[in-house]
Length: 142
Image 1 (cartoon, rainbow, N blue to C red):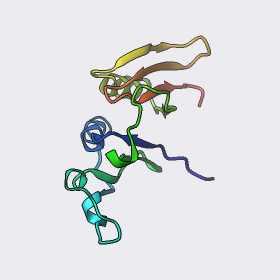
Image 2 (tube, rainbow, N blue to C red):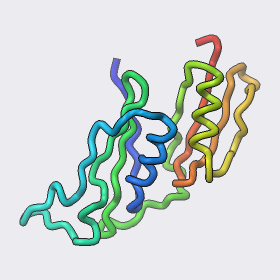
Image 3 (cartoon, one colour):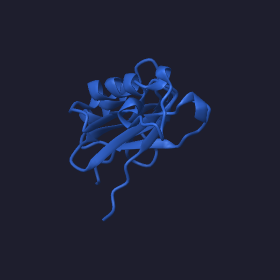
């Protein structure tokens, strides 16, 4: 079965956001590539963007990877309040769902508090302090 791994664009704060995500999920970054690592005469990098993130990856669980990059100013800005889709986390327990929801939502906006849903799962949704939308769900039946 193919895996689906979310990839997020940031306006220069990818490293900050991923350090925060790492503090909640745990683990270590699988890869961090900065724009300066790719600089060449054919691909010049502005001094103010050389330490920005070209690619960062954080393993989540056994098979998933959360990835991101900073969008260089020369390419425009990402609208951090647009609906960029939601990242769905399927927790293995109610306790894990609470931990992830409470950790990731710090400083953000809770759109649906975590709790029992009408469809039978334990569910909550929010926009984190970086503008990323998350859904955390635990389904006892799965």
